Image (cartoon, rainbow, N blue to C red; front, side):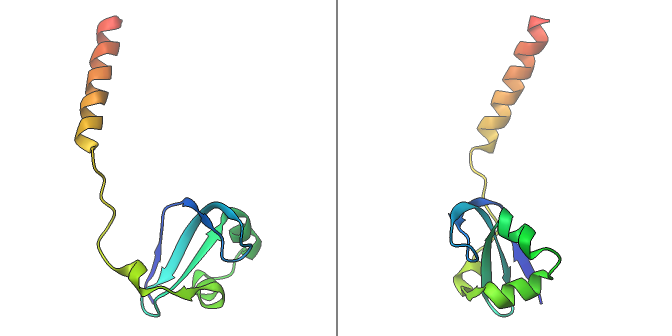
Length: 92
């Protein structure tokens, strides 16, 4: 079993059905994915992630396609941070 967990995002919890900040966990072998909010994750407690995926998850094989996330514009952000450091250094 190979489990992957996402970053948090705005979405619908599969347990309580509410639109909240959620995260997803999925099993690559079965293709099942579960999406949980923080409150439901706390209520579930010490149940193994594999059991939560099995009990609440739905098959979503496309969720495992593709590579890792891609961060665009990082070079611009780094230039801006360097500029701010220089400005702070010169203002002292």
